[in-house]
Amino acid sequence: MKVILAKDLLSVTNVKGEHNRDIFEKNGLLALNIISSPGAGKTTLLEVTMSLIKHKYNFGIIEGDLYTSRDARRLSEHARSIVQINTCGICHLNAEMVARALDDLVLDALDIIIIENVGNLVCPASFYLGETCKVALLSVPEGSDKPAKYPGLFKEARAVVINKADLLPYTDFDLPGCIQELQEINPGAEIFVISATTGAGMEKWVSWLEKMVQSVKQLPRSGMDVRLPDTDS
Ligand SMILES: Nc1nc2c(ncn2[C@@H]2O[C@H](COP(=O)(O)OP(=O)(O)O)[C@@H](O)[C@H]2O)c(=O)[nH]1
Ligand SMILES: [Mg+2]
Image 1 (cartoon, rainbow, N blue to C red):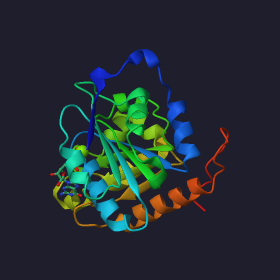
Image 2: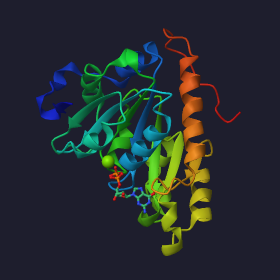
Image 3: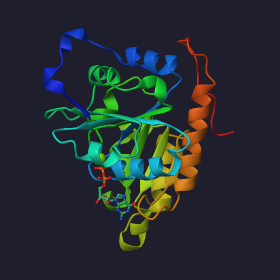
């Protein structure tokens, strides 16, 4: 597995998210930027998602972590191609890091690229990596007030996954209240309530993901001004 150290990158290249977006679009790839606080379950969600549909779709993973390759090792048995970025202390991925990782992914063998961002609800939301869309993950033990307290991410996410639903009976997490606040912050967001460890709610999430892959595959490969069709229909 390739490990890229952010401190070795030359920031003079000034790569923008649009550079990566062009690569995703030219290759007909759905690219998701998954963001949550540390421990919300991003890697677990990816492990389970890939184990359910890797027979249909080839996954490329760009794994962002401060220092270790632990998550990349967890995902490597499911992913077709995987690159680890160690940010060496930086609290988010940026477009240049992702551009460098794209050089090492086998793009023409892939259907989906998932970028697991560094665990943080604030900074990663401000950096456009060229992704098709952001997915925000929130877990039950963190508390239902997080969308209201960290609206920047939840406003931008195309989908919000509320994970660890198996812990609802043991916490004061206000699920209806959280969903209502999410809908106020971002009326267009898809909301999934799941437990990655029990598998509850995974079907709807996976079916949304599959619909997104198909939508992207149907887009023209060269256009810059393409828009994703509305996936609600
Ligand atoms: N109870 C419960 N634990 C979960 C669930 N999903 C993940 N976890 C646990 O939460 C911890 C952090 O998960 P991880 O996927 O590493 O989170 P990440 O830091 O966001 O990538 C691990 O101990 C997981 O087993 C879930 O749905 N329910
Ligand atoms: Mg992780």
